[in-house]
Structures are given as C-alpha cells and as structure tokens.
Image 1: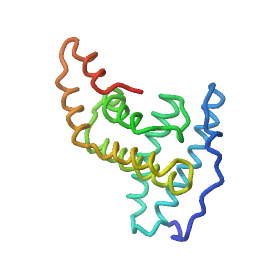
Image 2: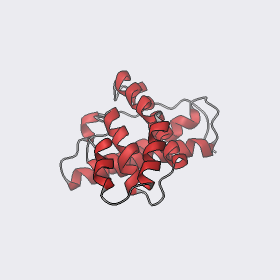
Image 3: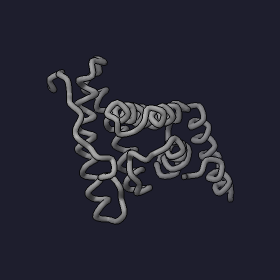
Image 4: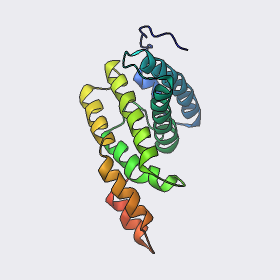
Length: 169
C-alpha cells in the first residue's frame, strides 16, 4: 500500500525528452518509465480517493499512449504533443494496430492520457491550453466508436479512404 501523502513533482527539463536517434529513444523511454511511475504515485496520493487498481489503470493507459505511440511510433517529444496526435492515435493508429480494437480499452487509454497531460500541465511541462485541447480530444469517444465500427466494416480498397478521414499527424 502506498502512503497517501503529497508528492513533489520531479525536476524535468522537457527538452531532455527530444528524440533524434535510437540512443535518444532508449533514454527517453527510460525517463518516461520513471515519470509514469511518479504519475501513478501522484494519482494515488491526489486525494481523489482512487483505488490502487483505478490509479494503475490510469497509469497503464498513459503508459501505452506515451511509450508505444508517442515514443516508439512517432518518435517525438512527449511534451510537444498536440490534440491532433491524440486524434490520430485514437481514430487511426490504435484501431489498425490493435488485434481487437474496442471502445472500452480505448476509453481507458484515453482517460489515462488525459489525466497524465493534466498532471504535466500542473507541473508546468505543457501549457494549460495544450492540456485542455488534449483532454478534449481524449473525450471524443463517440467519434472514436464510429471509427472503430467503420474499420470493422471496411471492404476491398476502403482502407486508404478510411485512413485519410483521420490521418496521423
């Protein structure tokens, strides 16, 4: 059981999360692991009365988005992310990269992503307007549900048009 006391934000320079080569990617992935563990502790101690399981689900969602999509997939700095990236992830990348894409799993990932970027804004690593835009993109679940359903209905050469409707940035 983690003690529920105030958690101090780690000292982070967002520029340290820039990625220009494989060495940077490995370094940034390691820093993100540590940051996400800190985020998990923060969520547990935030006073929102979340259980360890609920806090773990938020951290897991943020981890999947940040490490699998942003770092491994896009190879960009996690602090330069925009709402367009979130939309491309949820409306395209997640759907075609997941064996059985579904709104329950996607909603969990997006809930964790939104909370992570709120945390980043609270720590001053991203601006409040960027965080708000990311959170808004994370909450567009009806759109993502339609995207998943339309993906399952694809036939023939429909995939190219489907991708163009919600491109990756």
